[in-house]
Length: 290
Image (tube, rainbow, N blue to C red):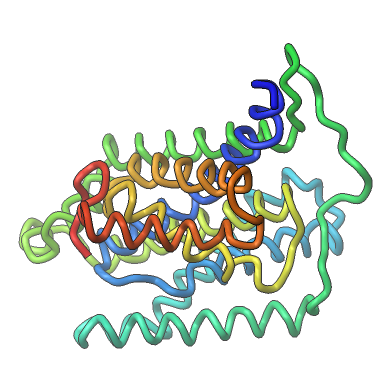
């Protein structure tokens, strides 16, 4: 195997898949870092966002790239509604109850997708998309856009968290919710803002997964474990850690088919998750301990 073949058939798909995982992992790390629970409905919320974009494209006749921000807005609003009607009344109860409630939300979202859009495989666009060649490196436009969009979205989020009033409030709530409340931070508004951002990130992850592969009702559920593994590998609560973790998980999964059957590559995320919890539970960038 030549170096170009390794790059074209394994490294580039790994970076693209890792970028999708990174978007989802950033949402997971925000939920755990600020709200202190593992959100098991994260993958199915991504599926809902992906199919919302499909509805805009197929029914509304919207361009696929215009559908992305609209789907992100829809999914952000849905996430706020889910928190208000299903999670908010559990905030004073043990967090394990919220975790179990999120599993119920995952099943509910999946059922909605299956009832509204059916169980058949869908795509945003029809036909074969041929890759462009740059100095021997073959890459499709959608793959390039996926990586660029991930970097752009994360850069905007990073700037927001570091330089804006509400971003600093989110960081303060992540560090110490009680102290943030005493300092005048409106925890309820911060929670709503967090869910809006998380919903938008979920929609972006689901959209790009559907754009680069296919849309299926179970697509989010299958990417849930890799996204959690990416968030924990990078360091829970660290946005940049989630990006690094996502890229590592994606590249390792794609590279693994050189040594193991394709059917087993998904198990690598579980193996990495177990190893990092045993060896370095704070992750690569020393995030919060689960």
